Image (cartoon, rainbow, N blue to C red; front, side, top):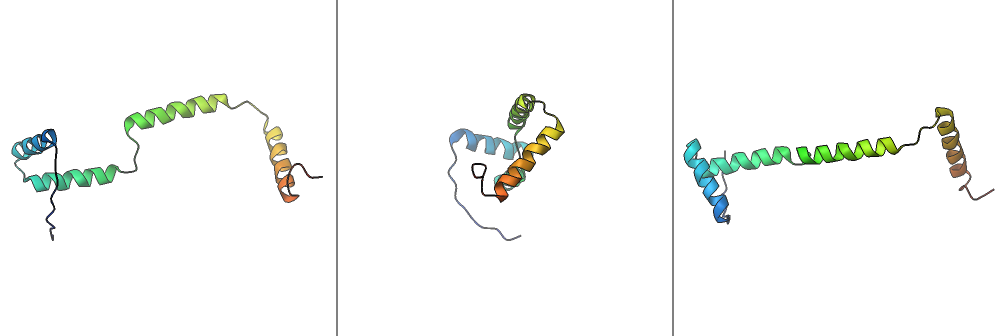
Length: 93
């Protein structure tokens, strides 16, 4: 695997955690950073547990706010909307 040298600045607490991890795991710091970036990249785009729970809560609120309607009523409204769109809008005759 080809490598590229890079320079980063880390705050003291982060640098200390990196040093501790390197000693504890007996791995070079660069390997720990590579693994951390790989793990982070795998999680990108996924919801955190906190976000997931919040979104499920919002979903539960929204679903309970949906008024109960008969399927025939919904179908009739959709048919009217489609008809109006074909004719150029609801306001036109």
